[in-house]
Amino acid sequence: MIQIDYQDRRPIYQQIMESVEDMALRGILGPNEKLPAVRSLAMELAINPNTIQRAYQELEKMGIIYTVQGKGCFIAPTIKELQEQRKADLWKILEELACRAMLLGISEELFCNRCQQIFRQQKEVLSS
Image (tube, rainbow, N blue to C red):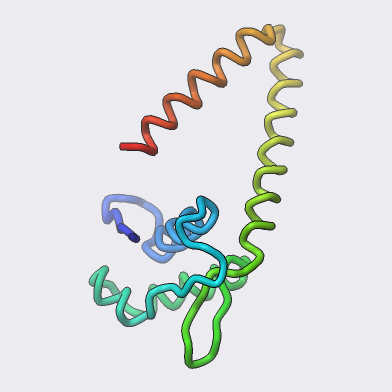
């Protein structure tokens, strides 16, 4: 589920946040799905429970999870809306890149070919 890379420069709580967010946005963790308890995840990852608690608090601030007192933390039911917003943001970035490419004299064909090449490379990285 969640893996920590101790060689990574990012703080551990941030790695946990990004992992949970990624799994939620990819649909691996669905809306209202319960996350592991702070203590059990801390034991599993062999890290301080305060680190898990901090990650969960930050995820809650971001609207990715919610807490039910005495029950635990759950993926927000609005995760699909957040996913759609992230997609809309991505399309906007792509529009800006296409505009920049045109201003630099890059052809549509070259731009599209390069996008496809990058997409395939990232697909390989994510599947490995």
